[in-house]
Amino acid sequence: MPETFPDLALDYAPWSEAHTTWIGLDSYLESLQDGLRVGVHSISSGVAPLDILIINSHAMGAGQAVLPVFFGAAVKDRTKERPPFFSGSGIAGKLGVSVLCVADPPLALSEDLALAWYAGSEFNACQESIAELLAGISQRLGVELLLIGGSGGGFAALQFRLEHSRGRRPEEAEADIAVLRLDRMVEAMGLDDTLH
Image (cartoon, rainbow, N blue to C red; front, side):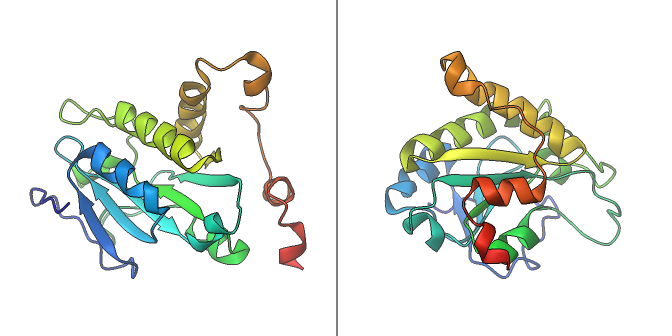
C-alpha cells in the first residue's frame, strides 16, 4: 500500500531495484504470502521509514533455508550520500543467495548522525519494529535468520539475535550467538561449491 514520508532527504536512486512503500509492518508481512520480492521496501514506522533491501529473492523459492540479514556499520562520509544505507549487497551478488539488508532508521532524521546503533529515537521505536519484522519473516517463510553486522551493525545483530531467541528452548538457541567468518557462513549455507 502506498505511503508518503516527510521530506527526510532520503535517496533511493542508488538502488536500482524497485521501490515499494508500505503502510505499517502488517501490510508488508501480509505481502510475504507471495514470498520475498526484490527491491527496496519502505515500511512506515514512526517519523522515519524502516527501509529494507531484498536481493536475489529467487533463491528463497529454490529451497534456501537460511536468510542472511545484514545490519550496517557507521557511515564514513555523510556529505557524499544520503540514507538509506545498506550493507551486504556485495556478498549477496557474489553468493547468489537471497539476502535482507536493514537500514538504520534514525540516520534519516539527521545529517549529523553517522551511527545510531538501530536504537530508534523519541520519534521512532525501530527496535520493536525490526524485531517484529525479523520474527514475521522467519515465521512466514519458515527460514532461519543469520544476523550479520560490523561495528554498530554487529551490536544490532547481537541484540536482535537475543530478541529473536527469547521464548525458545536453550538447545534451539545454543548457536544463536557466534562470530562467523565469511567462509564459515558460506559453508553453513551449503554454498561452498558456488565460490570455486
